[in-house]
Image (cartoon, rainbow, N blue to C red; front, side, top):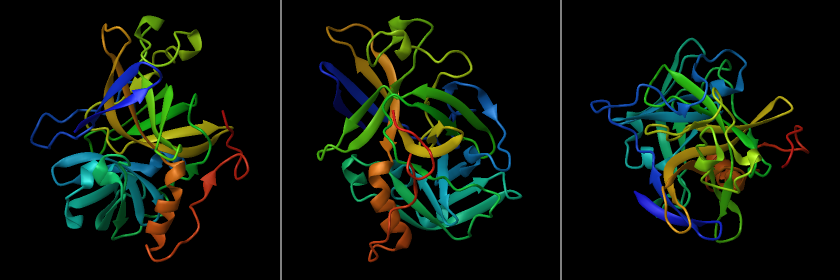
Length: 288
């Protein structure tokens, strides 16, 4: 699936959903490009909330946000039978659960809000952390990317900086984007060509590859981790006046979707309260 959105004044971005390769196809050996590479989850590390999620012949990522609920990208579970959707984690003695149900965001069919919630048959053990949503703005934040990228066992990590946020029709943050910066500013695809917009450096700067759908974008402030976004797409940026296209990736901003998440977790007929957000007022996570 491909669509275009305006970013800034005179640039357009062609978004390509990160459809996972089938198991019989040339699936990626590891997720993410660049970054710190493979990482082994340990007890108590908030990144351990990210597990592998299989849906039919797709193998992607999902993030545990409640004992029985996993957040992921809608396009990887749309049309899949719940019994064929399985969440796995190496924590908790090697946890595995099939889905009881899959709930797509009501605007996922339009390609606007590419999110889905997976209700697990078996509650995850306490050894697997639950992610709290980040409630602050994402623009300019360094995000920590965590992905299973086509593997049930191998997890990879990296970082990037959010360069742009695209609002929805109501003006609320919808899509975040980040570019994949090279060693100099000539590769800067989003934002001004300033040192602050350049690469985070070797072992940190990372971007998404095929199979990274449903992976996590965390924001960390004062040692506190908040789940800010779900990664869903790769993109190319056409610069003003032509020239080589730049590489961009991104996903869905979660804070404005807290109401839908809460209603789904509690049942559509119950308004419920939004899930706890990691904000300056409720946990010390700061704003830009």
